[in-house]
Length: 123
Length: 267
Image (cartoon, rainbow over all chains, first blue to last red; front, top):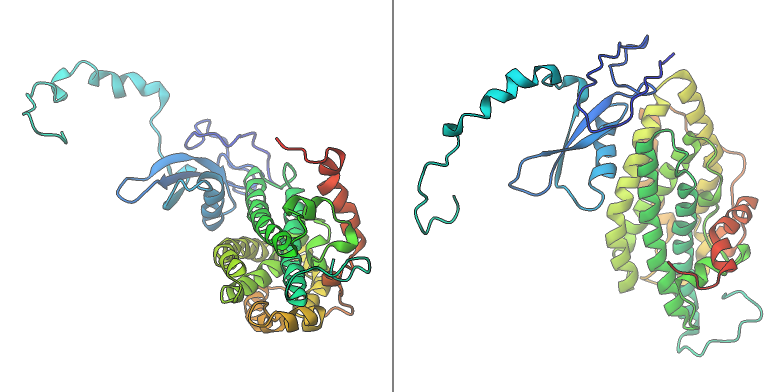
């Protein structure tokens, strides 16, 4: 019943190739019927969740458990988020220039023209 | 071994208690060691790479418990045998694990059923053993109960999904319960370890006292997974006395071959 979509569990976000959903209605990026999930791990209290990678799981509860085994078994985390990869809207590589290039020559957007007073340690 | 006819009386002050503590630690250590070996057989063969890692993780937890328990057994025995000697240089009849942990992996459903039944038992056991008068066993149990809580949850998640999944997954999960259930009675049979319990008051846990907690947990999972509790017509016996199914004889060469071929090998 399921279609084999050749998709390795890479660190990418949603499947940008737009693989069509199979006859079972599996979302793009699924392998043997298991959808892809993005994993975010908070390393310790006070810092934000960081993208750790992705994995396949049949549902959200199993995705959390798989993420625990794959990404936190050496004590890397105190909290995990999993998000269906299809829920992430990613910027397109084709739009790279209009999206990011204009920022490069706006030096005035960087706080480099201020004198840092002596004795201010956490700036 | 305590039942070996050629073993001289050890010089310890309380040989009966020491021998019983050795045998008790050995039994619990062998449970963990043999199941770790079985789960390790799944590595590179699990349905998904994520499951491969999960089973390997559980196996490593169990291996850690086995090392502590076998190391302690060797210490208690006092004849210089260490964890490696006990793991690699004993023969089938000297292993004291319950038979449930040695049965073959078969398909993923059987592995899941075995893990559910055993983890639920081991969870109750370690929870009770935290109050043991023996400080080493109590410390091991306090650490391991958290690991086993996860093993039990992992097996539960799969039992629910397979049982309440497709027609085929339901059929296989029910068949897996039917195959593993005859090994349940042995886990809770006080008579299997009666001498040890007598010799170790306040130290060893009476397995019969664990049954209610186990049954409450497992039967909830069975109901929620739309499965039926099996009513087997036979039951296993004697693992704690060194009697095993033929499966253990096939498992041990895999486990022991390297150490026996290259004694003392390390890397």
